[in-house]
Image (tube, rainbow, N blue to C red; front, side, top):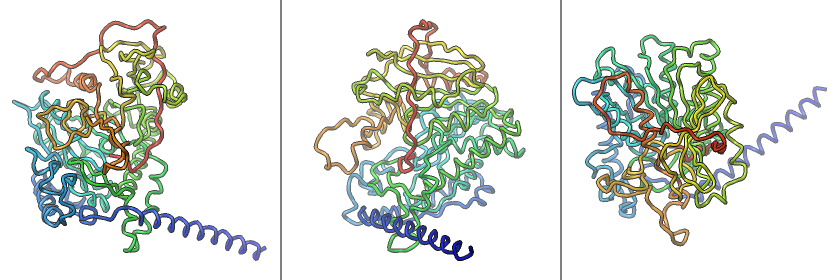
Length: 521
């Protein structure tokens, strides 16, 4: 019996060894065929430690940030080889996309102060591989409403992609707490606190709010606003660390990267390290466990209302996880989930999958629900008029309301990266404001030609990068200021009072495929 057992053990070990060697060899073959690492991949800025952030004030964090950007200038920009000094390289000082040439470098942390006495404090948390740029429009809206807006550059971001190779998600949570402290200091005691998060920043906003439930030293948010929150990522992200194992050997350093791409975006990394995928999984996994534990203990009753804006089609985060792991766990506390459906009247609608019509019912818990749901979609049948299908918390019947908006005929859906940007955004907008110039207009490109000539793939240019329903979204966010005395804001698109008859109800919407970590912002 013992011999038989040992024989099977040896066989299992041999199979595991063969699989490991095969995986290692395939990974080495894959990375060796890719582009070489550059200075911005190998240089790692020295960020403030987690312990230092817990003790630091805002001035100390900004001083450390200034030193980090000085280091990038010395060690990357000033050391570029002639072949790297090209217009498409954001690290080349002569490039039109070099952040140093703009009136404000939105890679850096920012503070927007209102005129007069602050009415509240708001903290803005950007996404993975992203920068504070992504939330600047919403931060400005908060400032107009009398809030102090603090947007922090999370460790590892805004500088060089190499900065994400060694950062931990706990570093981001420490930076979040620092930003909250500064926002409250500037706003003054007793003022409302709002936390706004996009993508990975959405997970950080939720994690802070959960920490505040258990830690009385942390101020509890009065409102949580999320855009494309990273509550769940792909199954691949769970094992992303394995893809980086060959990088333990110096000759295979490129294995530490899932993507090595040109850096043409002034406010976002295109290259994506294995560690970034790994940390996003660890954060979302810890977040889901915390939500489940506090829900089971009945402690989510003190959580602030959560307002989430999410594209049904999302190739970066799981819409299913947002519903099942977050919203279905929330108490009846006034939370709402807003979903942007696809456009069935678009030019490419004949190419959309048949399964699209059935998926929302599979991921959305049948009503009644403890939260309000709003689904924005076109009426179908060739009409691009957009309606809002609303199911109030505790009710089973949906009401359908016309919005006076239209879905652009050449857009079949929003995307993960589109939500926080108006169509007038200078970088990502489909109709960019000429005064909002950042050297390149990624959202307005509709070029045609032969494949293989561009430094990026066509799928990158095809991905929707701004939100045609941004005025609606801002109007919904602005509803949260009703109880706060503030200067009047610019008018936003509001739902019309008329209701569409029941026989004109909206079609169900499409659920996303699960995410690809290398696409995460």
